Length: 83
Image 1: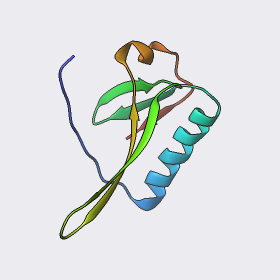
Image 2: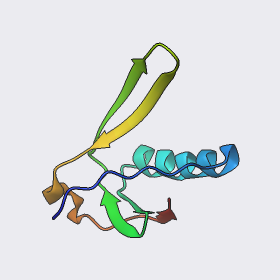
Image 3: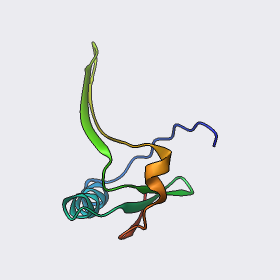
Image 4: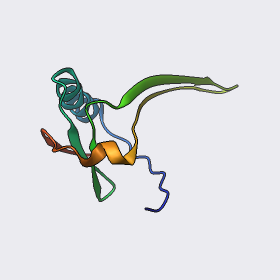
């Protein structure tokens, strides 16, 4: 599998809806299927969750990250979301 690094901007309401679906799946202990820039993948229920904060001279950034081993992504998804 090749490396990939993509980013997409959303409106506040679109972003909030995606976060709600993801949060519901995580709280229920279920995997979450999502599509980002044409590639569909599964975030497993046991994904490691972290928050990253960066500060530069002109801006700050907060990233909500979910990390998992590729072998863990074989679970069946509860729902789909397109990002």
